[in-house]
Image 1 (tube, rainbow, N blue to C red):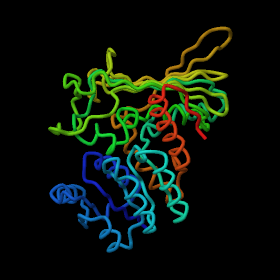
Image 2 (cartoon, rainbow, N blue to C red; image 1 turned 45 degrees about the vertical axis):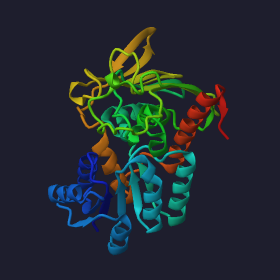
Image 3 (cartoon, rainbow, N blue to C red; image 1 turned 120 degrees about the vertical axis):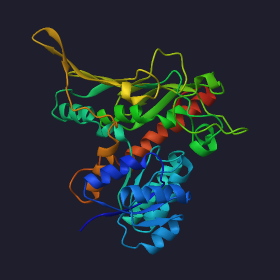
Length: 361
């Protein structure tokens, strides 16, 4: 029986969700967006038979839907996910999971009560390089990862001024919550240990300087709110004794955009990295994936060659969601992992506010 999916949000990320769902054999059964012009365009492009402007009406009228994909601004993730879960649908939600850990906890509870799958689009886990590194880790060639460093840094990458991206009430935060992928990926390689405490600092030096605007995002909103950080740096200690440092920025004095995780294991180290020629321009990207080992008294660096993947795992991530709810694959992420990630993000902002380490209960 074919999985029927309703999509909420007809924005740019729809192209990746649609490709992934179709690759897994699912039907794009409905699209819902308050912008009916965008919804109609998406329906025509992807052959979607049903169009809605209200998610509640979509869920009420299409009882045959199996799952819902949420591609909307951050503040709507929690209410839309809970609405869909309460209607008995599996949910695939764009990142970040929600505005904060409390909201994710509510989403997790709704999924548990409904006995439905809740997954998030942590798409960098689905990159070919990530699959390759996980195979080495799961084969025992890395050993326990003692420490890792996560970066998503930009020099000129602010996604517009005054819109929802820069409004903490609507977004939950700035680059830390927007570019959370490398923190998540590092923890994924570390087998997602429970965090113990966070020491961090945020900076807002360039957050209102339009010379640091990126080549993508949304149009500026005159008289809109811009009250998020431009950069965040932090240190996480986990209950296992493992540690993670991170650097995430939209605007910071770096040479170029870098998206990377480096780790040091008991048997070998490793690195996955994407360098951009200009901030936010994927077509100029250079990918590296390596393992660092000692063999016969010599330092050996292994280059791991994988197929080229310009969408950074977005299509494969959506495909995994469908295959997970159909019992064909294991889910690439879980609500418990999303909750721990959001606890770290919440604690980062609290540590920056207080100037002190924050214990995570």
